Length: 210
Image (cartoon, rainbow, N blue to C red):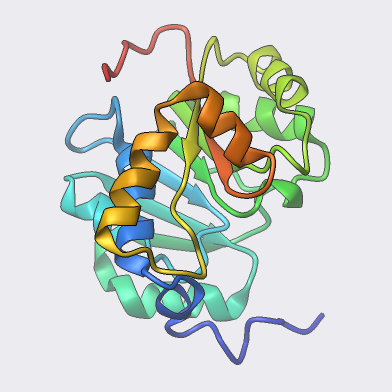
């Protein structure tokens, strides 16, 4: 099978997002909430490992997994010895040891069966699972029920209003972040665009705070 990312893997993160630093920083903030220095994050469908820099800077260990040979090569070139990068399908990968958190961004639709996928992730994830969810593509309450049934007890839904293809001027970015916290306005915006970030915590995980 041909690798559709072969010609564009290098520098993918910088091209895929209009403001890659803001987008990846916000994503890393949500992944890192509730984690401690030295904890390991497993990033399924990691692409070229663009978010890894932000997580490593927070003192976290990073393991990236992608099914694309080209993306794996790009991630290894970007991160060198600072991270472990593996080629594998996210449906089948087993890290071989417990990880603190597992993240899956722009890729939950690659799961062949969501119930099986969430159970598999729960089997090796100690603290939390974090993924983005398009409410126009999936029934949110149904997906939350699937995640909870897999063993994640506390579920947090956070609107994520950082555009991928358009960089917002600072005033608009500030307004967008404020709207994320206003329930009715956020729900209205999510009818038309943007996503939720779902953070699902194991029963023994302590509250990460605000």
